Image (cartoon, rainbow, N blue to C red; front, side, top):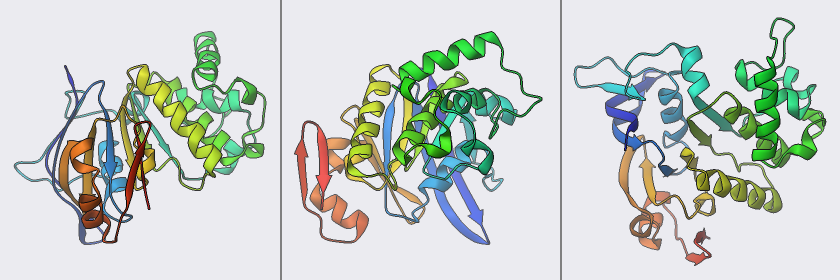
Length: 258
């Protein structure tokens, strides 16, 4: 199996403080992995390092290779990595339809500016993606009039539109109600069944779908555990990771903690 990501001895400093410490991580194409940890542990910083929004310290042992390449044109990299987060979109996105929002994924833009002309191939792909993420009913709905869960669904479609080879999901269930969380998880299950490579950043145990057989635990900017879900999703490990008492149950392959 070919490698999607290879990080070796990666250290990242922000504001004079080291926020990622000696990160070593290899991900194969086709893997679906959960990265679990409390708020502030460095999960989102890791995503920004993978997408080259942040750069590690230049050290002799440090290596970052994405799809086997150490250097990238950022425009090309954005086309191959689909990033979805809970961040609110910019104002230009709020006034376009679901269909148009998906088309912006081809251009990594917030709206379809006049100089951005979608080809017929792009338009056909956008229609396919609407079906793929079960968002046909949102095709002509203004993004700003959608619920948070509907917006998240469309943004996953946007991430997939530009032929993304890997989805980077950064806390996508944040601020969603219970029904929207369930619908989002079902969508992620469907994409995993299609063989989509996925890194899913979360601090919600229930977000870890059954297909995510590998779990990476982060704490204080470090990867502190990396292994099979059945070994790491235990009450003792979660209590240590989150620093609080945890009770854990499992139903239909999903874990629930309280």
